[in-house]
Image (tube, rainbow over all chains, first blue to last red; front, top):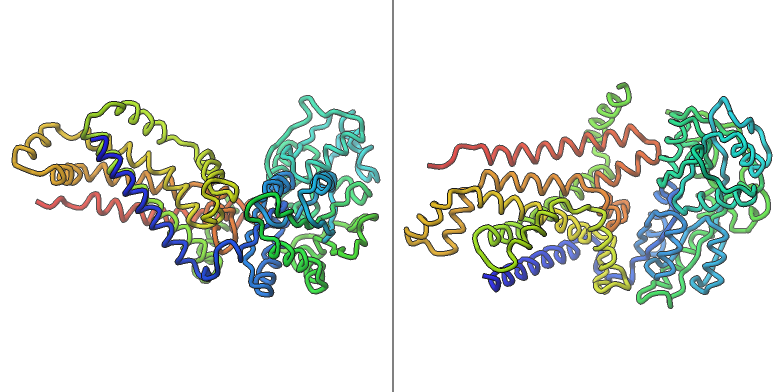
Length: 301
Length: 232
């Protein structure tokens, strides 16, 4: 009976494999050898959550004939996928971790693409009294001193990396009942902060997208340390067995083309009344805050 | 409450407007779920039947494994399938990661123990004298299994329902091995997560309504088959 069991199971496994393979072959446009046309982009979640990729990806595919597979993860996970050669090209916003990645030889090229900015969001009553602060580090010190509730992303994303750096500069190791590590994406983190009337560090795009249903307000913005710069990194082919170098180069080139940079500059204006990203392939945003502090514009319905 | 109402209206509007993205998501969800359910049936029913109808060393351990597998955390399956399908993994050369095929494999793995376990229970709940009688009437081994499965078809359809339910509602593995890529591996559940994260709650609610409607339709069909009058 054991033998019958083995035979039946192997037959069924074969059948499953056959069905799956048929499914793959049936996918439209799979005539080119698989793998050569596919480019895997490991990206921070904000480019997907904001909808920017929905605009850029179809154009890239139409222009170059590559098929881009964007995998939205935190910047930390994106770099890790690059380190293993599981992704061909990365779009990240975690400058220190990126610099380390390059220094260790995991990347070929790193180019600045665009920027936006972070804000500190918090309850309107502002228990730590930091509204209007021009310096995020001082604001963080005030939050800790007041033991005002603070929700951290806690997920090794680019946003989390900046938050940790700010705590470090404030010479504070955040812990205690007032400090919560959420371990979820930006949208969920903002919702948790909202429920708990807590402060949190957020990228402006996600905050704008959710602000209609949040009681939180922008308490700190425009500080130089709150700039959020996105780099594209092409992965070193030695990291893994099947890195698509040509496809990665094509995408990196596409991102800094003048036409693409114009698209980035226009993105979000129709929905939020202001752009979500500032293109800066010319490196214009490396030193100064990318987005001038703007009064939040009401989101259209 | 107003938001849920809005979501319902949005759901109807999305469906009627023939929005290409939404229909693509619906069709992909159906395609992936139905193929994965078919695979889990092809694997689970023979496996469950073998466990129910034969005695061999290690059978109790296998049954224990199947019962454990019925509660397999989808995210663990997603992680395992990812590791296997990574470019540097043992099956990397197939280039299946971030394709619908990878989602089918993961979801079939999730549902197979459920189908096998319920098949086992269905056959074991039959009167043992039925089998003896069939054999006495001169039925071959294959014929015997066939008639027993026929006799147990009510609980077997429940197995199909449970397997399909586990697959269509699954999210962790789908997002991990599929990557939630627009137009390729975005299903109703993964799209709902994305839209909720984007703050588009009306669309998220609408997608949920569509998902529930779809599940209801499939289950009504299966129930109709299950509850129709037995042939004499």
